[in-house]
Length: 512
Image (spheres, rainbow, N blue to C red):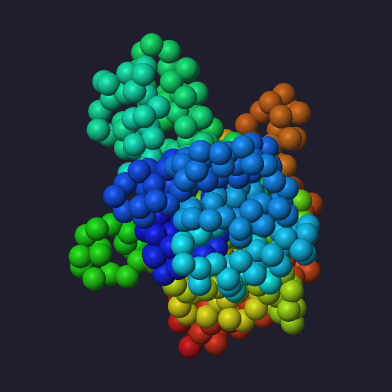
């Protein structure tokens, strides 16, 4: 365990007070207890835990009467300061007292500077479920993030949970891998609960593919409850996206870029892509179908929840979201309407700026196979440093669909409603001419609106006239966004973005 190695290194360096951030307190205590029984543990050193409920408990006895002592949050530090001998004290959930008592915070800070100079070694480990140290302690006390279990640890947990029921005995190697993958991103407690539920649902038949779906459903609920992320279903395929040939070709080229073959060839792992354009041009749809096309998990980041005071620290929320994405990786992290998340960072020295800085640093330095798929409607609200090279591999502008693309989009939505032989049944060229300035979402709404009169008229077949009538009754969004669209087109002209449409690129080339 990397965190345990880091903890040992700090202890060897006589760092007296260490903050251990973990949601899996019991698992961390199991690891500490195992360390205390090993030959690496200093001879004669005790391991003692304290919490407000159970008071002192000895995991490795330093003195027979110590467990009888009781203490308040203030006096526990006095007891540790006066302790004769060598011991490591684990203070559980001690952040509550640090947050609400300046005296307790100051006492702990004094111990952090005083204990390293004692003859006998006394260490303090504070366990909390999140990054929760007051600012005045952050420089004196190092924080070690335990993180979520990786694939190896998750497999060990799966085998431990199924040992008594033998429900994994007949599972293939592939099924074991899928069960482990389905639980990645969960804590030890959460994953253990998900595995046990899957065992109950499977009954005496053993775990199977239904169990994978059961664990995934459990993970979907748990991640959604965390607030910042949602495990999103991948819907459709690239065939559901009309037009946008340049973007689809770019994404297609990178489908295998996360493979081991790509690493051996020397390819860098793709970082992400930003799509800009007015609402309804298909940005969100592209994120959904890309994850499905690549066979990756799709995570949607709820930027509103990141800044919600009800969820705690915003900086903690963004770190937790990043950590989950990296554990689940390879995955697509979809940040919808990213300008709403970071618009406040421009000229703001507060929370938004710190969250933005955390996200930018991660995007620049991340090594995990997390492909960031960011969409934005209004780039004027985005900090300019977000869109520069090195953070995103490319920035695409989704322009209004051309005449040919509108025909393709109409074909997609008509096929979804069961219509075939479209060229013989409809005059889509006429409909495309009547929908100049319509975006993809408006063309989808047009098909839906056109079906109502046909349904009312004895449920007859949809006709071209229905589509034309519906088009005549709609005012496209582009009519009120023309100035904004022209500003976005200037980004393409200046080289800040690429046009996502092959047709638009061909038109631009012909005009040069």
